[in-house]
Length: 224
Image (cartoon, rainbow, N blue to C red; front, side, top):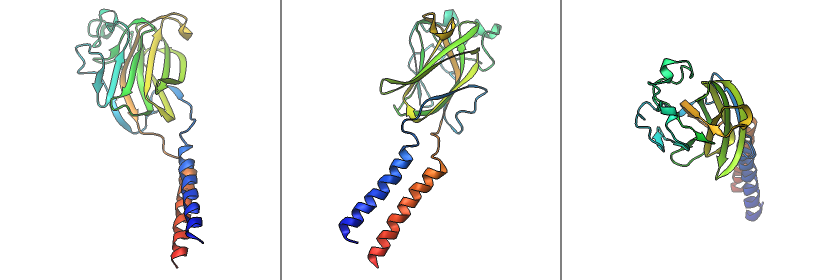
């Protein structure tokens, strides 16, 4: 085998293996779950807002950046909820101590990684200033929306989102009616967890290893 032919074969095999692994994430869609958690797997970042007693916007905690639009006053209750929500059953037990909340026309709470990297798995306790949670979520990557969805559930339900391709922002809204029919939103979230990307499937890993092994065999045969 000539040097040129071997070079082309090597590049072709490595390229095929790389593309096979990349295809595991490319073109993936955002999958949403609603329940008791379990979307994240191994947690890499977590936020509980216990230290955010000053109602700070653009709050950074454990590598996560939180931003809210709207008024940010949570109907006078603040993030800690000690004046309002701890005395009633509007929010689930997941909302203990401080939490992130806001209110206003189409107001949302945004979650990003502070370093600007992608999020592949995230879950959080989703709440609302209304007694019924009519939630709406949207994910973005480089300013383009990659997924969205509506759901209705008791406040404090755990919303999980995962995407093999990744996204760099999640926005959470909570409206007074289902399917975003009303424009006033009062979202709240707590117990945010971000996890590792989903590992490549065994078949894709095997294909990548096969390609690299073939390259090594061809290199050895040329040296003999």
